[in-house]
Image 1 (cartoon, rainbow, N blue to C red):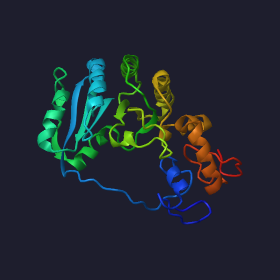
Image 2 (tube, helix red, strand yellow; image 1 turned 60 degrees about the horizontal axis):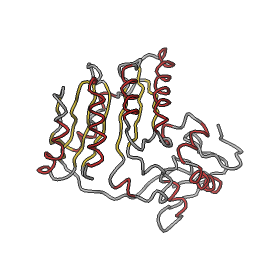
Image 3 (tube, rainbow, N blue to C red; image 1 turned 135 degrees about the horizontal axis):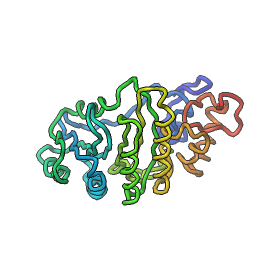
Image 4 (cartoon, rainbow, N blue to C red; image 1 turned 90 degrees about the horizontal axis):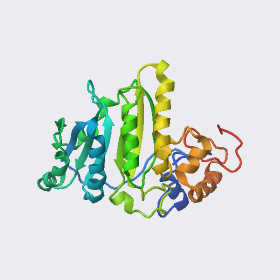
Length: 293
């Protein structure tokens, strides 16, 4: 990593351990990471992936199924729920899956996903892993205007599900939608104190994506995403760091919590006291003499 004063540092479990802790969740506040080592896991090249699509009128039923099914899903299965508009289509609710275990076992694992009534479309089956990664690209093309909000839910309660249903029906742009991500498996079993990222015990991470084409429509589309998240906040805990950057210091506090923010501020004082790296969910140094917004 290159720091604000031009130093080249290595952060790891054995070297600059404090910085290594802060970089894993610190949102670019301490320097520019130029390379990193990571552990690969064998996947594919063919996995069991794709989605099963249902009418948006079944949103409550599908989200309740998703809630219960995701709690018992094996580590090999990742499942998201999305309320979105496929290109040239009406709003739908989709269960998006990726099963990375043995294909002969995967069919039985995902079979219940296909049985919530009659799906509009079933494209869940063997496919290249690379194809899975681009599954929703067509729905979120470059060139659109975007505004996002997001956070974490300890549970997908019936009351929260009603909020999803309400705002799916009132979006000002048909291109907008919401994806509920699951944070389970290995990610949830890391000690919450091991990294700066604080929300490992919350299994649902909704990301609201407002998308529109005309700049004149910006205000109403931004307002829809903000109102949507405000309606979910009674059921939420914290905030997702990459969607809290428009909220100033309040967003940073919600993203990290008081205890971790205090530790991150001490790191900021040490590695970037001038706040050079501030175009992010900003961790402000104790004394800001430059770069602050």
